[in-house]
Each structure stands twice: as structure tokens, then as C-alpha cells.
Image (cartoon, rainbow, N blue to C red; front, side, top):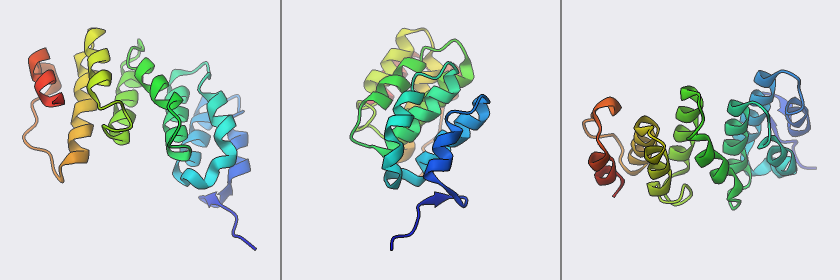
Length: 161
């Protein structure tokens, strides 16, 4: 008999049900929990993929991040995260950038496309955040950081290489 997979004592099917809640915070929590369970939550892949179409942007971002952890070989989650770098809400752009950074350069398209997309949209702070998180993954501790507001496009290009 195998042990049931759970997060905080709640099973995968119960977290999947949260993805259908009328409350976007509950949907976000369901996505987060499934991401924390990771590949053991493969039964939730289709539900997380459906959540990529959620009407609330931050739910889409968390669903994409969870899908990337549950089904690492799929590329749809990275596409959604990159698209959300252009969202009108700063916290959604930042959240998407943070999740792309957590995925690392290999899974986030090398980081260059993500940062370039944000920079091309006139939002260098989102690109800077991707680069900071990618840097943190490469080094045990970051070198001196320049505030994102003082970064220029040449600095972003240099940091991405």
C-alpha cells in the first residue's frame, strides 16, 4: 500500500478542487500547494493546464509555476510566465519574473529571451528581476547589486551573458 501524497495534510484531489473555487486566493493556494507536491501530483497536470487560462493574472502565474514543478518537461508554463512579464500590474510582472528566475536559465529559455521581452516592453525592472534570480541560482550569494532603477539596457545585456 502506497502512502497518499499530500501537502499540509491535504491530498492532491482536494488541492485540485481549490483550483475551481470562486475565490482567486483559494485558486492560487491550490496551485501553490500542487507545485509544492511536485511531480508526485501528476494527476493534477490537466487541471493546472486549465488554470493557465484563469481570468485572474496572479492565479495564471502561480498555476504556470506549479505546472513547471509538477510536469517539468512541458514548455507551456514558461510561455505563460513570459507573457505575464507584459502584464499591466507590476506585482504580476514581478511574480512572473521571480518564477522564471526560480526555473533557472535552462528552463526559462536561457534567461535572455525573458529579460529581453521585459526590456522590449519598456519594463526593465521585470527583466532585472529575472536576471537577479538567475544570478542567485548560479552563485551561492549575489555580488553587489545595483538597484534595478539604475540599470541601463547595456547593463542588463552584460548581466544576461
